[in-house]
Image (cartoon, rainbow, N blue to C red):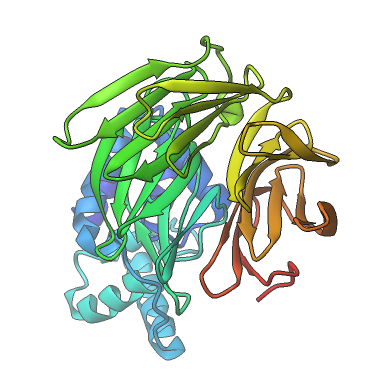
Length: 407
Ligand SMILES: [Zn+2]
């Protein structure tokens, strides 16, 4: 591909031209959020530019995949940028301020080493995080509405590793859990469960999960998924690894993606699953095969956690409940807003509300001990070292202390 082809063939309007000017920067991860969004929007409607993007992605090669965040010396970066500017001027007189890297990348072979370093450098932290899970020494988080590299692995040292994943629709992540070296992530927009090998940074497997998958648990080699819209419990795996069972728990209730919320949790030798559409918590046998009991807790239960021999239930309508082993409600805490995810650590529950608030509930007194306002808190995970990782849809991944101050 040379400059002439790039600016000539297949361009049929000014949208295409604008798209192609920004395309290389977007693929390299150095475009602004607005530019990235414009390019993505255009690619969804334009087959010509999709082809161009696919070609360019090949030119840039596998180095784009899961590149770690590495900072090259400032002097090197300046050299590359200057070379790019000079090169762009030669090829195109109407080039915008920012270099169109695609114009010089294949032809400036003398710069190959510098290019490789440059490509490794610009991996900005994703600007949104929607689900987060503690994964051994690492943290895995996922960005909804992203169709390119929605998964990120953050190492203990804070380095970020992006994982590419092509999806027909921009992803909408509802839940993530970690088990035995794998992060399991539910993408309700594409009706799939993704299994990410955290050490290797690659996607090992995908399971089809139609019906608004929202609740997730992994136990004894089986994967349990609660679908919010279709009201089913899906069970994957088992002794022969290929079995899939579907069990209808509640009637189907069509709902928008953003409202796909539910939870699944193993407690002792039972499996609990919420049905927020019907205000129920189902109690099943450990393999999900039999419904043993149903707790009518009311409201819209969306979260579950084990606590002190009983179970905590989070109601998105603004209640935290403590259930006794027989399902009776022992304690109730009313909260303002609509908390929809929570995590328990050291006798405290951390609740996230997309409206902006993270609340810390002291579980001994069952009172709110602390609150802090963030951007759009989506999910929170307790980490082994005593810190918390907050997924915020407008501020990205934030690392917090137990008192919610920044790490
Ligand atoms: Zn186009």
